[in-house]
Amino acid sequence: MLIQSQCSVLSPIRLTNPRRRCLLIPRPAPFNVFRSYGVVRTWLGKKKNGGVLVSATEEQSSSLNVQKKRKIVEHVSLLKAKQDLSDEEEKDMLDYLYTTQYQMRGILAISLGRVSDQNPDKYTHAVYMRFQRKEDIGKFYENPFYMRVLKEHVFPYCHELLNVHYESEVEDDIVPIFRKGEEFNFGVEFVLLLSFVDSASGHVEEALVSLEELIVGFPSLIVQSTRGLNLNLSSKQYTHGVVIRFRSFDAFEIFMGSSEYKKIWKSKFEQITRKTISVHFSVHPVGNEIM
Image (tube, rainbow, N blue to C red; front, side, top):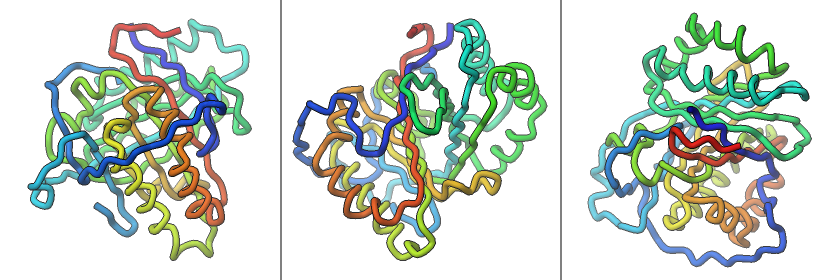
């Protein structure tokens, strides 16, 4: 049985529980440090014009600068389903989207879920995939199996599909590459898509680096984070993407509601963003059905 995760869309600084106030006490951690607890089957730095990964843990490493990296491509799809979508139709759609990883090469990780909250853009479901290289995602869009899944199991239920993908880097190790292990068994997947105003070119990287530096300081809340420039020429309404895996829903709420995050958003992003959308959904191991 595949997972049908619950997810919701929110503004970049909106709290699910606005009355909750938690202060973050930053704990310094290096970039691209990852602690492995073994491989478990799950369902699921800084460059100009490029992507960045932050894998944070409580442990620090003195060999950070010599750590090998591997390029990957992050892919995000946002869907708008029909209002009368039944549970059976939703399960059919999510099951077939999930099984695409077994029908084609290059897909390293996948997670997907349902948007439960009302939002201005009316997106109802989100799909996250990680690919090995840019060539793989090009083949993915044209793969006969995937095209059949869209035709027979997605488009009958959805009237809009937004695709964004970007290149980033991860540690050259099986756990962070394939997003496997105890830390990836549970948590919250957070996706942020942004479009910057034309006059902001000199401040975009500064804003993204500020967010990255905040993320890397909280290994107790965040497992992994990547960001990059949108490479999908057919979906240029968003110029950049960010994907963050939080350790839990509480960790997500604490970080998003913190004064530190709100300060960075207000001082670095608010004046230079044209359009944003953020989505988060719960992640659970294969075999646990969440309704």
